[in-house]
Length: 85
Image (cartoon, rainbow, N blue to C red; front, side, top):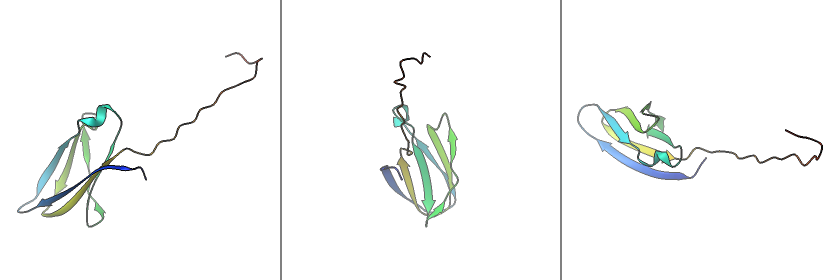
């Protein structure tokens, strides 16, 4: 798992509602957003290239994690002098 960038704890009371989260740092690198309650994932809807996140919430405690997704980098080259691209 990628290093977690930010973790937020959210406590809701009363009736249900919607969590609206706007990400300003997404121009720098792609991020993944997870919303969970008691280790159960909550469906997240992304708008505007993932800059705005919405999640339906019922009363309770939630954890929102924002982190960079894992990635791999491969560097290759061809040292063959007779091969032209």
